[in-house]
Image (cartoon, rainbow, N blue to C red; front, side, top):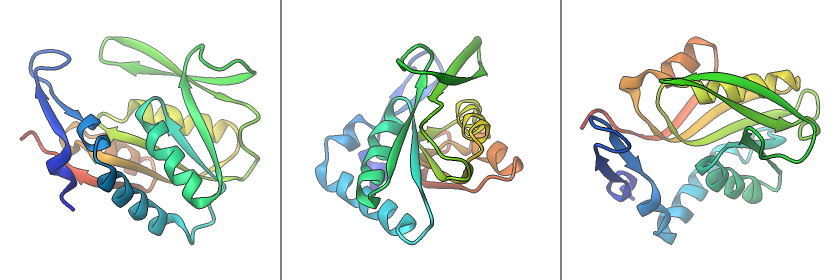
Length: 175
């Protein structure tokens, strides 16, 4: 299945010069979701994974699907102020300012093996912040997995330079 053909590219969104890769059109296709679910299931079914951590918001979609298929827990990594429990936090830099991710401190056991899922890797700031949260809970990151990698923005390389395994289903250059 040609997944790239199901991704809508929106020029100049959210600001001029950006080619936004919109996965909504892929989500509208049940066969594509099943295809992606099968890919992830086959990739991780024989690994010793205890949980899938999904980064808000679209990482929740794929992370929950994968966790359910594997029969393991799903751990949401949320934006600040969204969890009604005791959390750990990690601040990270954005192009203009900072943001914060949070996790429930009771979501993982020490030495748990985790896969972190998100829809897209661009500059890697959010992904690194998510990984720092996992490490604060003394868990192991087996792999980061993304539906889309934008290699020219360097996020996957940044993760690899920090000794993380990185997987993506497709790449978009500046096309």
